[in-house]
Length: 409
Length: 105
Image (cartoon, rainbow over all chains, first blue to last red; front, side):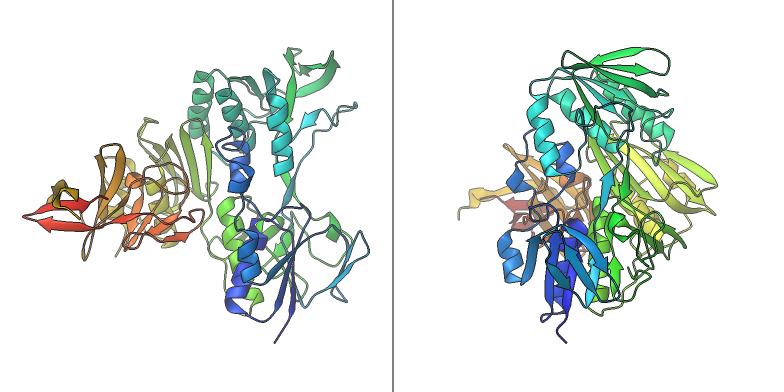
């Protein structure tokens, strides 16, 4: 049967879903509607290699327009402002109407904005898309002392890049550690030490009271009355799922679009994938919302299969990374449900990993090390976790013993 | 091709099964693998970002990059899973008197 399949959102989940649908369905029309006038591209390099000029815009695209053409996947740059789920129609700002048989929502997430009671809205920069990355890159070339508000992944990756561009960088974080939402303090402290070693200033436990513009520069007043002078401000304070379009519809929302393990939403023939979806994970027996490269890709693929009629549960074990200076930080599984923590290694040069165990099985792990030093062990950990293996803690804690030994053939 | 292209890597017992070693020659880095059916060689640096595959995980016929989990087929070099999309170069391998040689062009 030939269907009209519309993918709302031209990011990573959207493009992977489109290609997966095509793999399983050669006939249906597949159209991606994207708000950015760009083919789907990789976001991780924006805060790193793109700022450092090691990657150019053309290196970021997942696929060339030829690939999409060959697979008969249409991409249209359009902004949708109304959805009629009952009649299966999307309405664009320019009065175009799009009818669908199946709809995938992959609108992603958007940056939280600082709420400051003065007119500095256009003075604070955020980084999520290529356009913002280009602007930041251009402006920082003339700035020297840059303040980053928020000590999460994005803020710290930018801090690392700007430091490598010889800028003086200050990071202000409201919490008592960096990356506090998902990274254990022990690992965060190692990363913090590396930033300080490279000359970045890290300020923890401080809130911003006021930002004042002075002769083109800024003064940031903190809640301990200290004052920071800076000539450029970037904020990375988290994100929220992009669901405004659906707020007055029947679509079930709760920290994103609620989906089951098949990427199905509360409305028939409507699916959601990637950052925007608060999905049920059968392995953890709970709902979660993830913002990561691996998830956007795998969840998109899973949605694609289900849309094409290949019923597939999403069982991917979460995994994410961050690269800062010469460090690679990786996280797998979930690190907030445990009854025991085991440490492997104590030297960042060889990699340090914390395993989070529950009933002698690994639920999650977080590691950091010089690039290349934790990836293999974290990957093995994902597999052990996925297989519910009861682990030998002696092997886990001794870096001289290979984790492969724990893998059952 | 001349005999000089075969470069000695080391002895066959220097690699555990389903594992790899890194081998540097002149200014290039290679990975040499021992799989269940023999020895194989590829470039030693991931095609996605410049990271050494020596720290990667070998599973069956595949090597997975330790940095971003790009996966390559060790025998063909084919990039199997994003973010890697460019294939990895492979090299012929022979074993002579318990020594491994790879042919570098």
